[in-house]
Image (tube, rainbow, N blue to C red; front, side, top):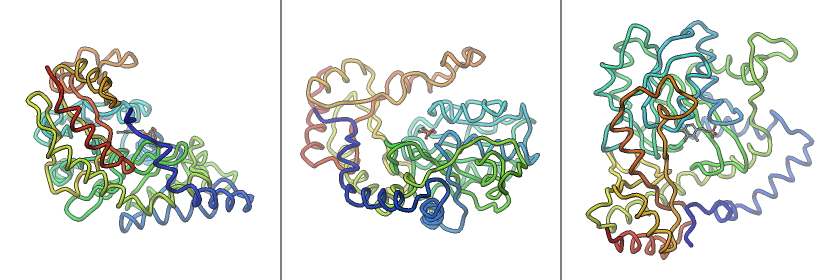
Length: 368
Ligand SMILES: *Cc1c(COP(=O)(O)O)cnc(C)c1O
């Protein structure tokens, strides 16, 4: 069976570096907010350009804490509206509702599955304060258009970069287009830890200072609590592992791109709709290779019988989730069709060429 994602093989490449890093942390006797953490923050910021990086416990916290900091700073308030793509992973929406802000779900562009800038005007109300674009599946959203709209209407932008580490748009990496950005280092992400982790990027020095306190009980000075904050810290071990993996993020993304290119060139089938890249190839880092097939159930069964494991990202859209009864009445036909038809093929830096061949052959052999 070709696994959807072989996390063991992915990390095996760094085995000796990881063990050495773990020994270094062990010998230091310092496990939270030490040298590895500070070095990772510096290196992660430096990878992007002129900005601040703030390590946190996970990607959901990264998004949640930025909105919370903006509320505490009086830039937004309870009940304000946040525009978010309707077909995103639930975490983007949870970050909004966790702060008692109101998510305004907008249908995506059908060709890229990303926030449709053409639909921003109809989503805008006097209470709109923030746009939360998601670089879904690894493809950068149309940030130039989103930025222009935000500037025209005095809105903040929080980028959800949890699936797009390293993607580049017009020479600038995602994460630097917004007023702040949230990243996840969940093990399966393009930059994944050996456990949970996350980070925030921002060019706003005051926001960075605020977040450095907020993630640590709201305290920048030990035992002095300026804000009410959670415990959301990135530990020394994960920081040390992430420093090692950051060094090969660009080459890993290049390998993902190579595999995606083969899939896009060689899968030829009348009912399998392949993903499209809106800009140049560097705008997409292929966290997921998502195809659309009307008869998904039969396709998934066929691939499984052919020895190819697939995953559906995602089977139920946020507005149909049990936790959001107030959103159930929304009609979002495009989003609903996407959730009915999408299925993700295996893609990862450690997939071998013959595995890629087998996935392609299995797809092309699908009888419908
Ligand atoms: C993974 C993910 C998150 C949340 O990250 P965690 O580290 O799992 O909390 C947020 N948004 C998107 C789009 C994601 O894919």
